[in-house]
Image (spheres, rainbow, N blue to C red):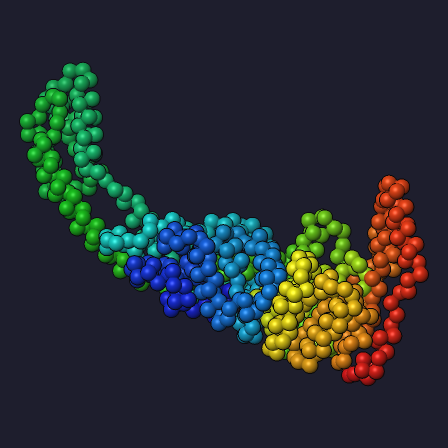
Length: 615
């Protein structure tokens, strides 16, 4: 298979991508071609720590460069897709759920750095990889080998680099392969220990196991030939000989035998040639006496000749090894990328299983889902912090495969306090963001049109604290006629209800004439609707009362074409029931009595001719 194109890791590696980060230009000029290749794969994978160590740049600059590189690879700036800080923050919160299931730190980084796309083919390619991960997980579970593979993947890492090389004999080529030895061993383990898993075997199709084994063996042989200090070894031999000569009475024949035994060991340790062996014997036996000492002149000459030979032989060995490794660049690159991708899609598959995610269909005009759930509530349920999560079905705009409500580009979501309006808005945002990342979504079925997303959460809107600041952010968003998805939670907190209603209506009228989608959560349906001039949809979430525990009983599934009541009475009843002090309970009851004459919202706005007659 191609680890490739359109996938999470499969981007086009090119040093041209570094032009987007001026900090990298002088860095690249100081490195060899081999080290630049090393940098490119590390930045491609997202090895922030390794890149910072090699280049000397701080981690913040390194992280920025990696993000820019990924964005260049998919052809779009992330900020042109996730248009608000809220959208970008939600994306990171979502990706954190997937990163938690990654086995290696490299893959955790790569998942957290996943760049979005608006290109349908790129999104579909990523979803296909997710499907492959699911197949692999199913087989691993069948053979009870999930943890075995995760243990192998947890060992995946780059060995520490020694920094940039300036001398040829340090061999950047060799350093490239040595730094990936641990990853190669993980690849070999996968190729040999999971042969019964056909989906995994297919994922590794085309990898030459014998060639990989030979590369690993060659690296280990090079690593085994450690640095030898001949002078220290000869000095140690002198000490040992003298210790043995001092034990009892030693005649000349016995002394020669002791020296001969040590010479034999020195020949084995230093791997001397015939000429060097003769030099060693002459240095040992010319003027043999007690205490023993090698002839200094002969010893110096032996060491000089031995070291010169070692330099020559090591240079030849290094050149031979480099030539061998250079023939396997592509294979090792491919193995490294496959392992990171395997860890990635396995983590995604584990999240799919854990949170009941499915592959969305890629549409053209809207976003909709059947039995969708908020993935963060699912996490709380999985951890035992809440008992159940009610799935809901919802749509915005026109969807071909999801037919649950009248298609409208603009929808007002109304209803009960604490009824789940914000949760539904967040769920819609999560479905959109996950799809743009090429990841599965939390529902039974979904259709999503790729388009930029503007998310304005309620807590952020309130924190703005200024109508002027809020409008200076929102109006340019809606004035821009490019197609987008806008999700806005309770704008009315910024000013008095009448003015808020008219402002919201003006925004709705502007959006309804274009191709953008808008979901706005509001309690001001009655204040807004008289000023709305174009067809929209109003949905409502209703609360029916309090249960025995004093909790609000809410049907989280919105009613379509229905204004939901805010139910402040039920909220106050809940608080009153929970109050312990009589004075607090009494005041709650006074507030409740003040609402007795309040009329519940009526549905007459939905009978307006422009809504009733609209198709």
